[in-house]
Length: 522
Image 1 (spheres, helix red, strand yellow):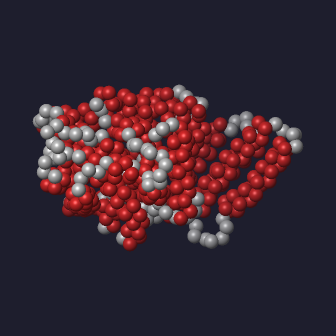
Image 2 (cartoon, one colour; image 1 turned 90 degrees about the vertical axis):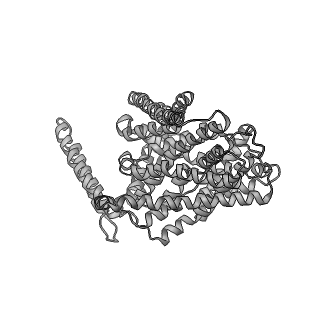
Image 3 (cartoon, one colour; image 1 turned 180 degrees about the vertical axis):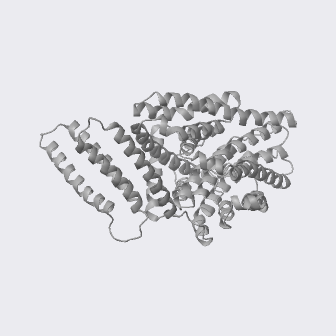
């Protein structure tokens, strides 16, 4: 990219594309990729060359970090078996099968580099999986499994890519050396991630300024990457471990103001980076096509074979992995799997920008192998990304509806929330009575009523009555009052009766109250 103006243009395209997707009711990753594909052929538009380091060091770490922060550690732990089967087992299975297929079609290319290319196209994308799964409202457990897979699979794929390239370009590696490489990458990533968690947890615990907390949060993923890369540890694993730990401990590490501000900050960062990623993928088409140096028949044959292998291997792996362990009755009773779950997981194999960046990281040439063509592999990787995003991503909502995937029961969520809210109310009342000595009785009475209102609101969500509930009536009427208060403050500022700082302070308080009202309406 050539300067700040290019970045601004790309971000503007990403924002407009996301707005168009929302207006049309489509998934934004698909719309943004298609927009990028179209723009790549406009003469004079930005000539953007995607650099692997830009993706793997500049874009991927913050996206993985925010995804890890928002991942439930208890849910991740509960679903660790299917997550590891997908993130490690399926990546290895796909890489080996794709490598064998490519080696059969291109026998002059070493098997090691073919398997390395298989690792390039093996991992579904973290950004695409999260964006699509949450957008179409898949059950919570499915979302956890897909997000967990996408958090870890990049690490296993990149380690396998590193081993395959090393075997193809250097002296032969034996099993011990491969094991050492994997141990350093995975184990080192865990250790670096744990160090990152400890350091930033201590920093967050000692910081009460929301701006400083946000700055630390932005620095964290990049600091972990810079610590992991020089020692050969997996930066992906390190960022995920740090994010999972901090996300789990966030309620006790940060002040309320820091949590609120950080949530808004990372939502904006993720929105912009996700949009930028998919536009960048689409914009690479012109460069990828111009680099092809093989006959069309060869290109079509290898591309079709890889697409078919990538698509089928996921289903071949997912169904046995889902059901073989449940031949044991105890496991089947403890962990039932609806028949639609494996089918949806199999279909949700969208690849993304990491696949393209990894393909660009393949060696430009191989000594003694004149038939090797990185450009061909880059094209196939690009075709896999576009096919899985546009075809599988666009049809995943339809597949989920056809399979009648059982949705999460909102009544169960509301019942659990109401029960915990009642318990929290009792704890709050007990704490109030203990601390109320010397406080005005009117204040204590008002706080008791607040506890009761919050508990009642939680139980109201269980009701099926179509009439307006007391909390809904309160929200509607209080919103009218807030609008009236805002108008008075604005008019007073315009008349010169209050300073701008007074208006800002009043609006901030009213905005916070309105955000609480809107949250309670969901």
